[in-house]
Each structure stands twice: as C-alpha cells, then as structure tokens.
Length: 377
Image (cartoon, rainbow, N blue to C red; front, side):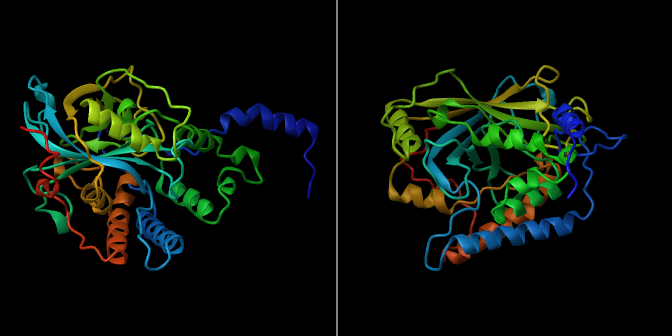
C-alpha cells in the first residue's frame, strides 16, 4: 500500500471541510413543486424493503411481539383535536385545511432507535399525527375509503441523507454492523462527513418532555399542483422543564403521564412554502429550507386535553396502529424520493408486523379511541 506523504495529508485536512456530502444533484431546469425520480428507484425500493424485513426477522424471534422497524418505543398515544385557523389565508385553503375545520386526532410520541433503549440516551424523537373523519378519496388504493390523514415528524429539520440509494447504502452498512464504512472510505475526499454530522446531531438529542419540543416533517408534501411545502409542529409555549436527576429508563412516558394528568397542552401546526426549487429542493430532505427566505406559517392548532392514557387498551391501540405519510388526500401527497420509497416499504413492514403478531391489519378510526379520552367538540 502506498504511504500518504505529509504534504498530501495536509491537503486532505485542508479540503476535508468541503467533504460534506452526499448531495443530491438538482437538475438545472428544476421547477417548483416538481419531482425528479432517481435512476433505478424501483430496484432500490425493493432492496430497502427486503433488507428491512430481514432485519425485523433477525431481531424478533418467533412468538415474540414484532415492533416497528423505526420508532418502535412509544411514550404513549394521546387523544387531541386539530383545528384549522378561522382566518386562514385563502391561498392555503385546500384539502384538509378548511377555515375553522375541527378534527379529532391521535398523537403518538416515540423514540426512533430500532432497538428500544433508555430515554436518557440521545435519540430521534418523533410524533405521528392521525386525523379522523377526513372526507375524500385517499391515495392508497387498498385504503382509498379510509377517513384518516397522517403526518409524521421528528425533532430535527433534516434527514442525514437525501437520496434513496444513499439511504439504502447507509442502512446496508448499519445492518452489517459497520455503519462507519458508509461514512469513511479509502479516499478521504469521498468521506461523507456531512451525513456523519447530521446523524450525530439527530441521534444526540436529549429532551425533557415530548410536549416541549419542536418537530419537522423533513420531507416535502404537495399543496395542490406545483406547490411543495414542509410541515412543523411547535409547542404553543416555550416551556422547557428540567430532566430529573433520578429519571428512569422510561422517564419520557412518566413525564407525559404527569403533565397530561395535571394540565392540557398545545401545539401550533405550521407550513413552510417552497420558494426556490434549487435552494429548497424537493428531492433532497438532507437540505434545510431557509426559514428567513420562507418563514413557517401557522395553519392550525393542536389541543391535547388533560387525560390519563396509561392503560392496556390504549397501549394496544398505539402498538397496532399504522402510520404512513401516504394516508393522505391526493392534494397533500408526499413528494420526493425518500417519500416514494416509503410508500411500499411502510406498507410491507405493516403487513409483516401484523401477520407475525396475528393481528388484523386495518386502519383505525375515531370509534377505536376510548370515548373518555376524546375531547369534546
């Protein structure tokens, strides 16, 4: 093997700050709200699903409960209401966003790690929002008559990688037990240090309560034709409590229980419009859309009333419910390569999990939520 000279080594470290990839190549003629599928996307999707199912099969022995491949640990599912602003800007009035419209909702708070671990460790934190009694034909053919609409968000504005093939490569390296092999190669100029810094930022976060942090969709969604948006959910109040010195392994659930037993909570549901197709790409969720160029706009408010959700019936519902960004009306369809891969992968995972657990796979409705938890309309 050739030795690296001191001069070459100095050049490597000089240019390392520019090895921030991987980046998605954006077409020169890119347009607002348009998608640009990646080469071999169908095969990449199949390989991603196959690898995910293999990981689940190896992680869960027979006769054990098979949990989700991502966000398997939930802190609780809680009942809520989702009310669209009465003074909504007419340009944003579309689909579920009708001025003054109120929906009953289910919120699922979770940790992202594939293998559940202590809440005291840094991790991705997620929120799944399922709206009920949403009229209109939905995107998924097998569930076109469902009356739900889902939003999925995490507590970080971007993903570590943006292209489906890079996501698969990262997953393959992690599955092989060699995640560093994705970041580092023999050629330092090809090191994917941008992905490394994003992974560390995403997985390093410690929080005091799921009710006290902001969440982002990371991936974009349509708002009608030729318009793309991202979503965010932000606490109505900037309150951050301290993490107790004697916090247990599941302190986020304990905190959620305590807070909602004592008082209600509230989130603002926000939307950010794509203003520039190059600096705010649809196909690269590893790129943050600049809030100075396109500030988030409040569309709705999520009210979480006082409640006691910690009982078996609610935990079973929370475990068996399926969430996917493709539970949606066509005018709010998910956009970008990561979302296109998610469509068959999420369906495949849900089918596998329910079959292994011998649980009927069906989309839940408002009637499945214990009535004592539902806020009065």
